[in-house]
Structure formats: C-alpha cells, structure tokens
Length: 284
Image (cartoon, rainbow, N blue to C red):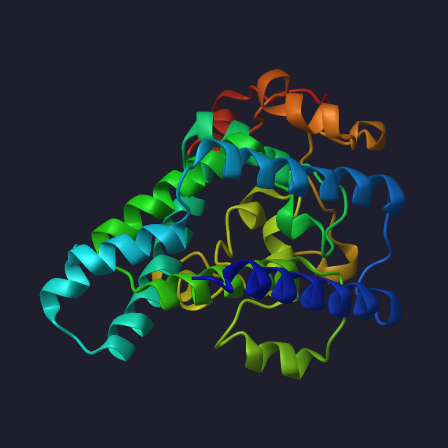
C-alpha cells in the first residue's frame, strides 16, 4: 500500500503531540522522575525497535496481508464473508490475539523477563506506550504475522488495526486527567488511561489485570478486569518493586534488564507459591 508510511507517521505524530500537550495542561499524576531522561530513553527505544523490525523482517504485516489476500489464505477467505465484515472481524480477532499474547508475557517467566522492561518505568506517560524491549518486539511481530496468515486478514484491516494500536497504546498510557464519568463510559468501547494505568501498579494483583490495549471487552469477559487501584490513581505506585532506582532509566540499562534483573513475584502463578514459601526477591 503506497500511502502506508505516511498514514502511520501522520497518525503517530498527531496523536503523540495531542497527548503530550494534554499531559502538560491536565496531568493525572505528578511525575516522580526526570521527564527529560525518561523521554530520551523511551523514544530512543522506539527508533531502535523500528530499525530492528525493518532489518529483520523483509515483509511487514500489511505487505503479508496483501499476499494472503491474493492467495486466498486464512479462515476469513474460507467463510466467504463480505470485505467489510471480514475487515471488522480481522480487527477484533487481532485485538484478541494481542490480549492473549499480553497475558502470555505475564504468565511465562522467560517472557515476563522480556516484558518487565515495559513495566520497570517509574512513571507512565505517552512515551511508555512504546517502551518495549527489542526481543519482545521481534516476538510480537512474529505472532502478528502468523495471525495475519491464519485469519486471512484484509490489508486495509491490518493497517487500520496497527494505526489504532499505535494510537491507543499512547492514549491508554498517557498521564492525562479526564472526568470520572467520561472515563467509565469510554471504558465500554476503548481502554482508557485510568483503566490501563492500574496495570502498571507495583501491586502484583493489579499488575496482572487490565491487559487490553484497544478493546476493553476481553478483560471483562475473561475475568481480568479491575475498576480501580487499591490506593487510587494518584496514590498508587507505578513500576515494579525490584526496580526502584531512577538512575537506571537509561537505554543501556533498559536493554540489559531482562538478562540481569530479577523477575520478582509478578509472573502469574508465582506470587502464591512465593507467599507460601516466604521466599521473596530483593530489589536491584
């Protein structure tokens, strides 16, 4: 699709600028660490991940969807639905795949090691939505490509999903304040900042909740939804209990963290065992 790069860049920049201004004018929480240092590190990882994906993957999700559409591969082609029905179904199914992938990265200790770089941020704002380890980006891209083939997702639906995901990831990580009533209404159609911020709480039970990025339905249907944090949006502590040193909010440390840091009790199923045996892990 010839206009794909322009669509992506326009969507990213416009959403980023709007949310960054909103965070300045109406922040939800006071920041606890240097915004300059965090933004430099978090945006650096965005550029690094973009290079890694372009270097390792000769074809991207939309390009693969074009081939899939030409070959007639995937479940949606077998069903013979109309293009618009297949497009809507593809976006919804891809979002479910993303939800399940996110839960998997919290459940498997090795995958949690990679994913905890995202959670080690000591504040949550618009840049946190793109703070992922390159290894996680590679694994996520591989899963998405496989899903595109199995689903038979139309190219336009894949592009729409990726643009929406990019925008909603920045939105639901943003440090913006909105009226409580508006937030509760929006939670029925999209994951809001107040909903997803709970997922970044230092409290394990809250970390392992609200996994959705785009659609909030999966958390509600599959029992991982939490309405409010125990200590409130302003009182909650962001991050992981084993990573509290603000001097390590740097790009080199972020890249090394999965290999030298401790997983703590956060992986699903591990916390109860550690509570029983009394074996905690000290911070780094």
